[in-house]
Amino acid sequence: MSSWIKVYTNLPGHPKMNRLVASLGVDETLAIGMLVKFWTFVAKYAENGFLAGFDPDAIGMATTSNLALARKFVPAAISAGFMDTEPLRTHDWLVYFGPYLKNKYQVDPAGTVEEV
Image 1 (cartoon, rainbow, N blue to C red):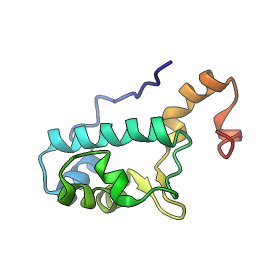
Image 2 (image 1 turned 180 degrees about the vertical axis):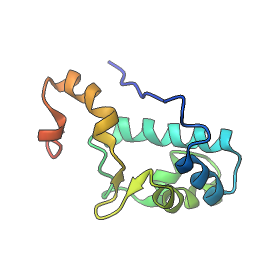
Image 3 (image 1 turned 90 degrees about the vertical axis):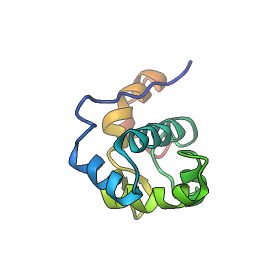
Image 4 (image 1 turned 90 degrees about the horizontal axis):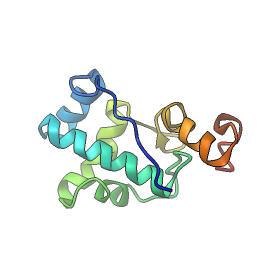
């Protein structure tokens, strides 16, 4: 079974997206694509949203094949509010991906985040 990611219609032009665009120095279309690729990476390899075990460059390379741009992704995503630090994780991941996990595991992900 493949997982899915919701992309809300308010993403383009959202203040967080504007910050990501500015930090990366790319146009919004590319930044949205990079962000969606980031979310699919998290869904596949870190479905609980925690990324502390991943090298920031590897996370960035999941978003683009441009190494210079990939190295900018994690700091830009943190600055924009799409990622949190201490520990490194996807911001509000279980709010958005939790319903999928609840269906997949038939549990409440907010109560079992460490096991997921």
